[in-house]
Image 1 (cartoon, rainbow, N blue to C red):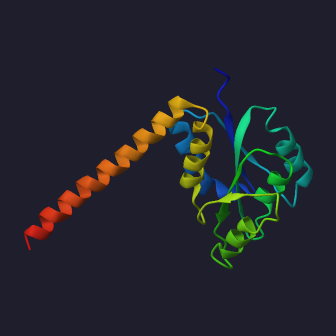
Image 2 (cartoon, one colour):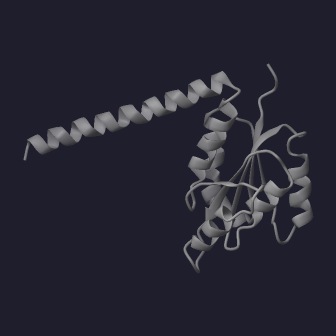
Image 3 (spheres, rainbow, N blue to C red):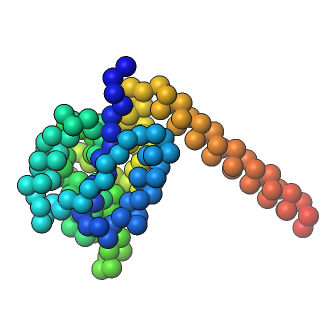
Length: 168
């Protein structure tokens, strides 16, 4: 079996890290190797192009990109690679992240960016894991276990609410 693919977690600013850290934690909980970097689509466009252009040969299988406001990072990275890119639109003061959401989803034909909710770092990590799990049965089993645990938690909450309601 080949070496496990890594996931790159790229943010446009270090101020994004408190949100993006949820993706890093989730990826690590699945045992997925990660690298985390600050690369700006506007301030360091050459670094963005170089990172994305060499990502596949450097062992990455998916790139997660978090950016706010104009949020061009995910699209710029996607322009330089054929790897899946997942965008996390980040909340901003001016438009509460709507600007970043629209910028992230409105990619031109041929440059797709999968997009999660504003600030949806954990879902970005799960989606990255699901992509890698297509060729990794061990990772697929971990995802199934996560889904089963979620189901069990909901069932327990349902039972507790039914018991509370019966007491009324």
